[in-house]
Image (cartoon, rainbow, N blue to C red; front, side, top):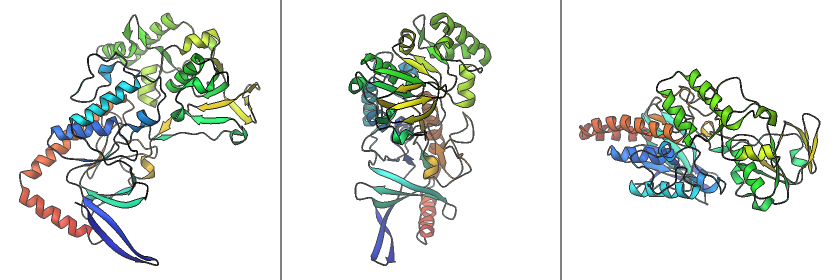
Length: 424
């Protein structure tokens, strides 16, 4: 139920803000993490409200992913709680299939996010014990406020594109896009395209460009682990998970690197230097994901994809590299990653760090104080998000059931808190 929150006298009349008291948790973000949390809460008998700034669920997948994208891991490691992927889906579902799965998931658990609602700020009111979340709605940017006991941050690790400040890029003159805007290499046919970044996105964009008869050059500034997606027909990730049950991390890393060398050979001679730290240790300590090769390496070996060092500066239609080499370039794709946007709106500094991730490492980064939770910040993909969602739902579910055992006291407490809130 929406209410008029306050009436403030201003120079040009009166300002009205609507508000509502949320019956249950408020979840910010309708990606896989937010959907998984809402579904698990429903299984606990707890209602929730999901806010989404875009006009659809999973906007990263629907709006900011390239056409050829598939899940990089086998589907059994990417399914959300309670619902496996359809049996007829391939081992590595396509972008379209994954979106279909998420839409079916939302429908199954009757999850109906409030779309086009962008959170501007969220802060905890210690007097009332509630979170106050301010949003703007729709094209007219109408202001609204949600008041909730529990706040679940599900905006994820990839909320905002990272666009580096590179000398001369503004004077380049050609097309410059982030990988989040890239759809297909078809429009770049016949062009010299510089791909800045060599992670999974950079590798796959370069592969797609080469397959569409463009001439990609991929910038590799630092060391990178490139692993085969499969070894002897088995998922490399699945093998790693199996070995981790019995062997220490350092030994699993050593075995993975030996298998990689046998399958891919020596890749350093192609400009892809390996880090000193093993791939799993690097992932756990730094959050840097190894590249799972799906064909880009063959294109690098054949010369269809050129590997180049870091950028010194751009000029009109050209790029100068740190080794002094100059390349003629028609277009640039920035495969420079993403970041969390939590610091831009969450007014809290104890649970989340300045980089927008929980301070506590996995598996303890899902619960803060005062009813604050985080889901999907584990740097462990969809399986990590599912683990968070289950923990959060169980934790809130216990409190919810305990309060509902004493409904009269709960009603009085809420009434007192609302009176406290009305004083603002």
